[in-house]
Length: 186
Image (tube, rainbow, N blue to C red; front, side, top):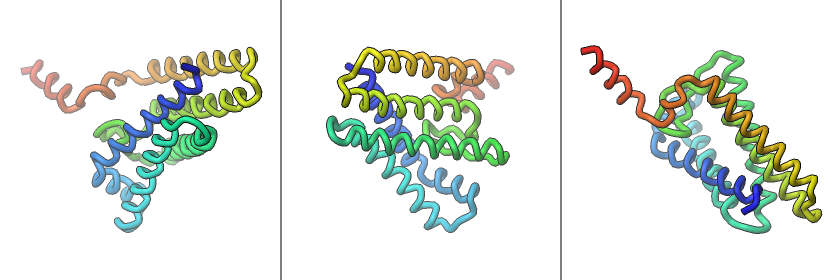
């Protein structure tokens, strides 16, 4: 399996899971959006539905082989540029927003989320660059680009892990951990 194919499948899973989690916490997602950008419920719900539909459509397009790949890779790149820009805006403005993209965490988006978004952005760029290289008889130089992108992605993940001491809480229920700690002190 080529690196480009790996990127397509990886990003398809990420988008599908993000869409599913937004659906699972639909009301909270819409309420958080309304709190961040004061707007009528109908508009917030419409925007939320369009975002979820975009993520689902891109996930499906990334799974389907062939002609859609460059188009879906380009749209995925635009989406992750938008997500990264949104997180940067949040961090710079001091606003807080919890998107519930990867679970029911009420944690506001922060630097670790920006690192993850930049990593996903790098994978979308890798999809485009490798796919374009395949159109011109995929050369050894393109293989070097693949390796450089893999190393860069690994570095971004490493920076994310170092910068995020509560990393484990992504995979555990924060309430359950708090209950365990409360039980230890009794």
